[in-house]
Amino acid sequence: MDHDIKDITLADAGRLRIEWAEKNMPVLRLIRERFAREKPLRGVKVACCLHVTTETANLMETLKAGGAELRLCGSNPLSTQDDVAASLVKHTRIGVFAVRGEDNKRYYAHIAAVLANKPNVTIDDGADLVSELHRSKNGTGDIWAGLEETTTGVVRLRAMEHEGVLKYPVLAVNDSETKHFFDNRYGTGQSTIDGIIRATNHLMAGSRFVVVGYGWCGRGVTTRARGMGAEVIVCEVEPVKALEAVMDGLRVMPLAQAAKVGDVFVTLTGNCAVIRKEHFVKMKDGAVVANSGHFNVEIDIEALEKLSVKKRHIRHEVVEYQLKDGRRIHLLGEGRLINLAAAEGHPAMVMDMSFANQALGAEYIVKNRRKLPQGVFSIPKRIDKDIARLKLKSMGVKIDGLTPAQRKYLSEWRVGT
Ligand code: NAI
Image (cartoon, rainbow, N blue to C red):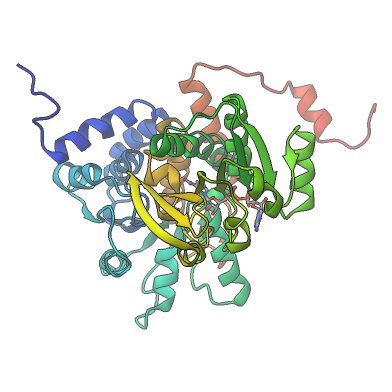
């Protein structure tokens, strides 16, 4: 008789979930098959700091098939899926330094353990590897280049570049169109709502849902929340983005005003202290507050703690804060990215493209090692387009091509000649 899922070990349960994700990662599968034949990463030491999810496991297996020597740590204390970490150690035989719920000290000890392998390539989600390396008195060692997955990481790296302190080139995977168009918009869009619902079982229909930050992620969350019947209110600081939200048919107002009417609040700004004391004091009894931006700095939890007279862990990933006048505010997932803290992160279908960028980006770095310019730059456009082409093919979608006459027309400036 086949064994029951309850009987199998953590690592084996993780293996099954990794296989499940693999079914929806056809582009990465193709890359893995080629990597296994060509071994483009043979002997290359790759240090990875990523959310330890089933999709990341598929990236690890792809890089390993290419011949890379890998170490992996988590890029957020609450995003590690322990069954996946166990499976990567047991079945894929790579060094994983991550455990869900690790404290700050352990989080940084794990980063140090990954860097102790003296990598040639770093793969980051949030730039913690790069910043720890630059802080270390041992210097950056023999690093050829790095790859960065997310918006906040790219913002940090550009700040380092601007200050002239970034010591090695980094490819901003987030800049690829096959990354942020899909991962940030559809991936964060769906999984953020998934996390909020799993944590609260909240009914979206008819609720006032406040989205703070109308960037790629914010727009994704908004569209999905509207589709489920929520009345979405957008808060922004950039006039163009705010105008876009207005013309998308949304209500736009300052957060101080939205605070009085919202049922659910979610931050997706990449900024700090976005929801603060002045907002908490105006919120309705029962308000739900969550974050899906990279760091847990978007909600001023310290201010909420100070305002509260009582605090209870009321559900998994929900803490209820009671204010002096009896109103209760519910904070989800300790203010950490809720799609990973309370759900499973992005669906494999979008991570297929993000991680195809990572795998092909790593190959590009190895091919061009010691020739890349300093600074933060994008993955070459042809790689981005190839990924889109492969994804369409895997979905059975065909598109038109330019005719020679159209190609010629688009390359000329004399119309009608
Ligand atoms: P983005 O740059 O496209 O959008 C951020 C938006 O927030 C901008 O429109 C900006 O004007 C706005 N903003 C900044 N400060 C604000 C404030 N105080 N109040 C209101 N709006 C403000 O960035 P993107 O790609 O949407 O990413 C947002 C965050 O989500 C980043 O931290 C990114 O790293 C993270 N992220 C999280 C993922 C997840 O799995 N949860 C996946 C992808 C990105």
